[in-house]
Image (cartoon, rainbow, N blue to C red; front, side, top):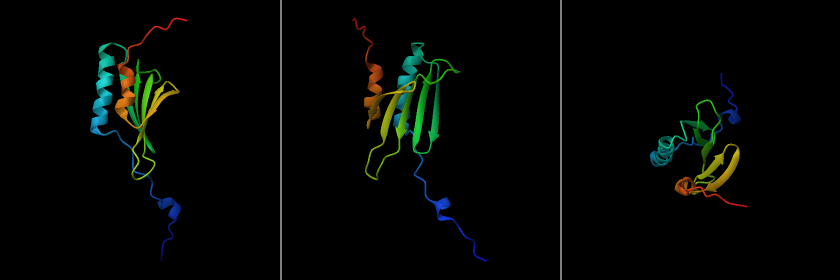
Length: 113
């Protein structure tokens, strides 16, 4: 007897999103600089439908201090988008991971009021 298959159950999901080797090298280079300074201690990588996340933590049991998110490309010729979060606040969006990570190269300045 024929078996009925619901097409909605078989619908193709988007390809999984991962950080490639060059992206991981760039992320880990920034991470290792801040570990050497004693500012960061732990990191985590998570994969969810349509995105990959790289999070850094000051302490193992704290919430992420910064999170870099790679979003799936929106079309066949589109580049992936990268988002940078500080805690829950989005602070930058870019189509280039290196442009996003350049934020960590800038020295912090004191602004007087």
